[in-house]
Length: 266
Image 1: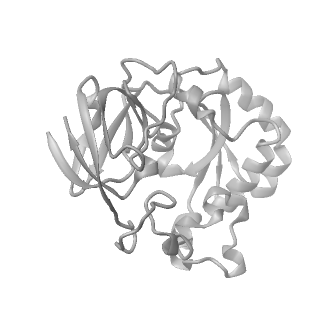
Image 2: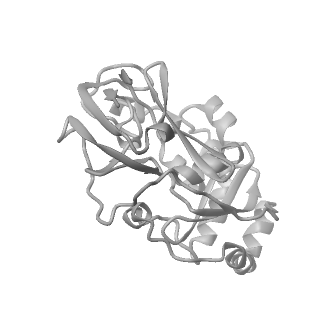
Image 3: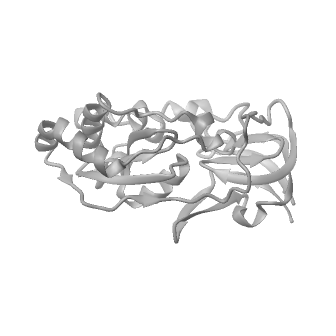
C-alpha cells in the first residue's frame, strides 16, 4: 500500500465493543485497524493546506486550519471548547447559520474513564466517536441538554466534583484508574440537581459502555513523534488509541497534523 494526500483526523466508530479507525488521505480512506502489527512509513511532503480555504500555510491551527480562518470560523471559536461561553443569543456568533445548526442540537453530558473519570459534552450523534477520540475505556451518558450552552452550564457545575481533562500519557500507556461510573453518576446528580432543573435537562438511564482498542502493545514510556522535526516517521504500528498511532518508535497524534500532505506506505 502507498497513498499520498492531505490527511484529516481519523474517522472512528464502535463495532461490537471495539474501536474502528479509518484515516482520510486525499480522496482515500485507509483501514487503520488492518495496518496494526505491520511496518508503516509516514512521510511529510512539506505542504500544509488549510482545510477551509485551501491556502498553503506554515502551520496547522485548530485541527487543520490557517490562522486567518481560525479568527473567522465559528468552529474555531473559544465557545467550542467552552460551551458555557456560547454567545449566539448576543448576536455575536461568527457564523450564525452554522451556530444555529450546530449549537442547538441535543447535547449529551457524559462521564468517561480515560486515565481517570472525567466529564465531557458532545453532540448526541457523535457520542461513540467522541469517546473513542478521547481514548475512553468506558463511558456513560448521564444527561441530555437542549443546547450546547445548557450543556456547558451543567459541565461547569460538574467540574466542581470531577475532572474535565485527561492525562494523555497515562491514557496511552493504558494506566487507567478503576472506577464505577454508574455509582459516580448517582453521587454527581445529587450535587447538581439545581442546575439540571434550571436548564430543563433530562437525566438519562443508559448503561455504561466499554470500549476495546486495536492495541497489540501499549508503550511503557511515551515518546512523541513530530513531522516538523522528523519528516519521515517509520516503525511497526503496535496499536491505535484516541487519535494516536502507537508505533514501536513513539506515538503520533494524527489530529495535530491534520491538513499535512503525507505519503503513507505499508
